[in-house]
Amino acid sequence: MKIFEIDGHKLFLGDVLEVLSSEIKDNSIDLIFADPPYNIGKDFNGFKDKWEFESDYLEWSYNWLKVCVNKLKDNGSLYLMASTQSMPYFDLYLRDRLTVLSRIVWYYDSSGVQAKKYYGSLYEPILYCVKDKRNYTFNSSHILVEAKTGAVRKLIDYRKSTPSVYNSEKVPGNVWEFPRVRYRMPEYEEHPTQKPTSLLERIIKASSNEGDIVLDIFSGSFTTSFVAKQLKRKSIGIELQEKYLQIGLRRLGITPDDSEEELMSEVNSGELSPKQLKLNLQL
Image 1 (cartoon, rainbow, N blue to C red):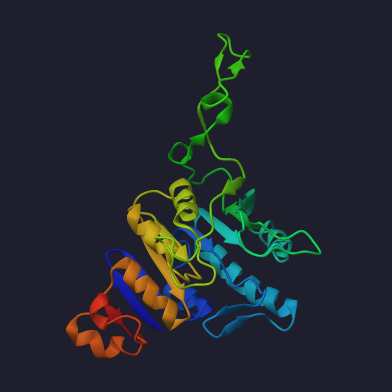
Image 2: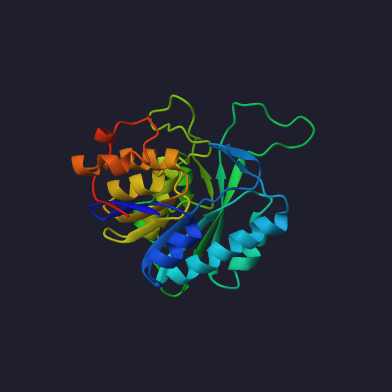
């Protein structure tokens, strides 16, 4: 295990269960974002995202989910992404341990080849859960979107004592439309399941406050940590693959001192010079 740290942001290179169990205190995290392997055969730099038996995948997932629940503060929130095939199992598991407030659909268009013998998938499900349904963070005013009824169509609400146009802004519903990250987009990183900054901005703005700790247990392209830094939150990112850790180091602006370059070379596979990475490597 290796730890990289700068200005309230930690990046762990290691196994998720090991890091959660040994490095993160119970009841210490304000917001958890979990975007695990989907068990659908994606290639993560040589790791094939496919368990031999679905039951093994679910057992592994339940293990880290159980630990995540313990790491959340009493007023904490958890967002979980998964494949459409697996989400029903996670929903049933989590509803016995947390309160599921929303079942969100992240919708996106697809310019690629779609299925020809069945309806192809154009969305990914997200569970939004809280530990205490009477006490949790939800900054509705920070995530308002255009309400077409009022802002565009200018319809009149005659139920009001003085009839007037409907509000021009509203809290988003549970269908979110954000474009997928594609090659040559400004935010693109070399990762097969990169999530857009706009998606994480909504989640982090809504369910955390400045100075809160945001944990991403499968960091991948480290979009969560990157957005958390922009929004003045603290962050913890966990990643098993050295190649993807490099992305996080760069996006967080972490570079080692000269005395740490030899240690850093264990992680650096040549894509980035040690001079491009930063600070505080702990073994």
